[in-house]
Length: 489
Image (cartoon, rainbow, N blue to C red; front, top):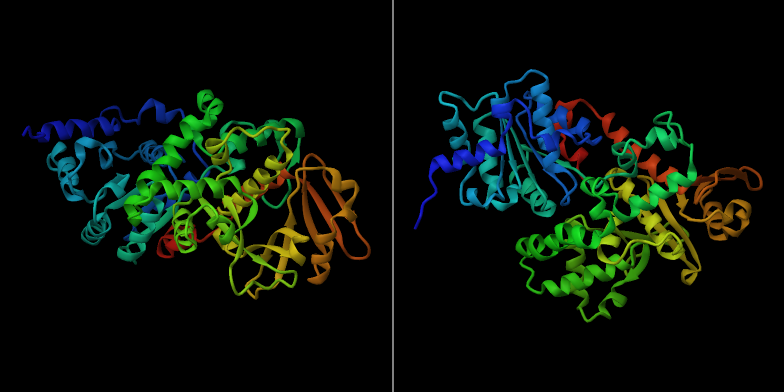
């Protein structure tokens, strides 16, 4: 059998690291604008004072590889030696079967006399290597002066192994899909469409019709950086996004991690859940598809771990959770997965659009797990009363609530929001936020209570912006590294 020579392996590593020769990363990478998450990740990887590896995880196609090369580019811009940065992707067929130690040895052989201390070593798509977590922990222990970064798209697998084997040695960093804030920022549309005075002030739309058009584009394809710059993907997200993101997770990542044998059954369930995004479902209604209830519960756990969906628990009008979780809401973690599975949303399809607007707003909260874990929805009186988003404080008391609408009707008819009025009265709330399609208004209702009406696109933008801002106000990089789970999902 023909054997791969070390020279051939080293040539491939040089291709993956063009900065060794050109002192800059590939031109394709350099043209991309940095996501806001770059400013959160770079301080973690640039501090060598804490001996931890950074585990970058997230769904497929959210820009992890681009972000890794941008980190290298920034180090070089700051005057660091380009040869001190080693990037390798473990999904390259030529490199299959090589251990992390063997890859590092190949790197050091390319530069005779070079030492590993003081370098930054990046293992991309690390989930393709068995027992990567054990080997990486050994490297971290033996080389405290080296910064290791590992990344991968199988978020569920990485998180589990990171916490099982990397306790005290790994810091998890989740890179989610694009927020609406980042979507406008990457397209240089923020200043065109908005007056944004920064955190603490609600943005003002300059062109609400133009903003809403971009909001619908965001719903259709805007969660993935590649899609927002590629017209072919925008026209046929089902062809590109489904095959690259959803199918690979359902057909490869989850079955290999959890030993799922009936992939068709899993795919069927995910399609059913995706179609109901923003709606309440029950295990009984889902089991009508022919899948056993216990199997459905396991599959939902897997789909949540893979960052495809998020379930939300129901409370009643008193703010209490039910002892048995028979009812729950389901959201896609990225609204544009709907168009990838079914079709582009029609701006005139008010029902589907309303569900996707609610999904988009909820998905912005996923960037703030400390908030998301306390978000519920309220439903009572046989489903006649409902409030879309309810936040419970640490004492499990209702702190605030939001009703999501893609309509301006309630701005002029606020008393039609009977369920919201009742719920706020039951919990002594003095204000409630209601999203609209294009209007903003503060409406005083009786004595001491008011509705704040704000455009859905503006609210979605502000939640995404504030989530990123709040991450930036955490302690310094050293403290974040030591308390790694503070910036994970």
